[in-house]
Amino acid sequence: MQHPVSVLFFLWLVTGTIAQAQTIWHVSPDGSGDGTSWAAASSLTDAVDNAVAGDELWLKQGTYPISSTISIDKTLEILGGFSGLGNQRDPALYPSIIDGQHAVSIIRTGLNSNDMLFEGISFINGYADIGTDVNDIKGGHYTYREMVHALTTVFSGIIHRKTE
Image 1 (spheres, rainbow, N blue to C red):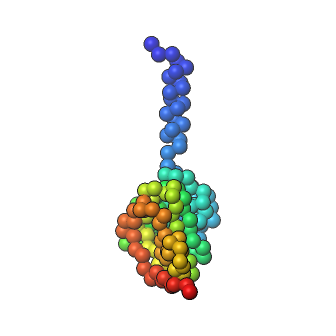
Image 2: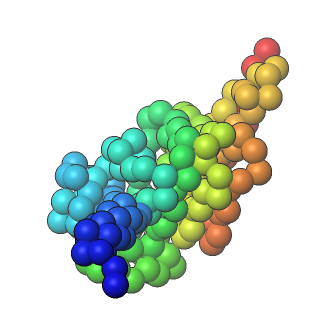
Image 3: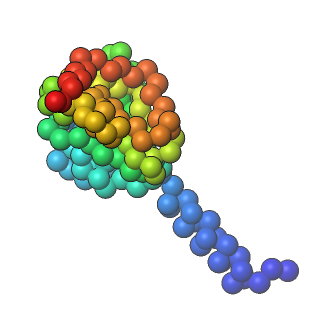
């Protein structure tokens, strides 16, 4: 016969593990909420900054103009193609576009972002000055190591300029 305290401890441990499962962040081009629902959608940068490894970011349809590079140093799944009304995706019908406005490198992933996933997102108008250091080469996306999975993802209008 098992001791009741052991059973309770096991149940507490399992419940705590389940509670720490991945979080879904709802993201909208004009979001300013906490990301817990479409009605309270977060901005893209706030969701990236506040998410923890293993979380999913669901991007509502629309264009996300950015003015600075989004740096990600944790493993996230960033999924585009949501209408903003439910949990079904259709990137062709509800395109999610991250726009660097020909001013910035769009995404930079780092050492701790193993198995990053971008799916159903278009990255457009990224920009980079190509300097003399390998870390200066970017544009739409800069990856520290080969660890990023980009499925049904489009990179378009990316400009690279060499600095003198």
